[in-house]
Image 1: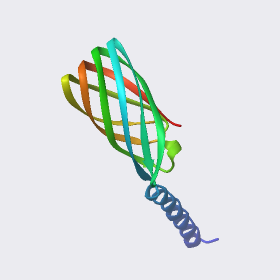
Image 2 (image 1 turned 90 degrees about the vertical axis):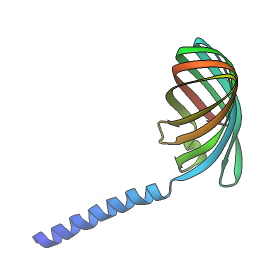
Image 3 (image 1 turned 180 degrees about the vertical axis):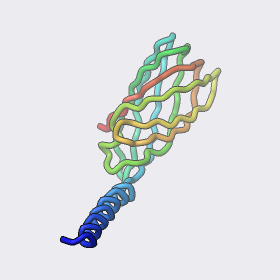
Length: 146
């Protein structure tokens, strides 16, 4: 094998590997998600709720649960809706998502959150919050597709 054929073989291999990387990124998909979460906190907080994930026209029930720690006080209910990006299947949505943030509601408030799980699924959510809640904390939520 001469130098030019080794170079061609290496170039073809590099292009094939790059093509697989681009193909897998191109096949990533997105879904819509809606859920309601109840949250109660006094420094350490807990949350739970349920909702729906819509992927390729099918609806899947989900459960949401989480914990938070930091400066957090109050009780609230938040209605979230948004998009889950960078997924290939419904199973990619299941996982633990982490976030650092702050906010508050006295009666009504709004939230915007972007979180990622260990599979690379990215949640982009907006929410309407009702209740009395003040927080500057680290939080995590676990989403399970039923």
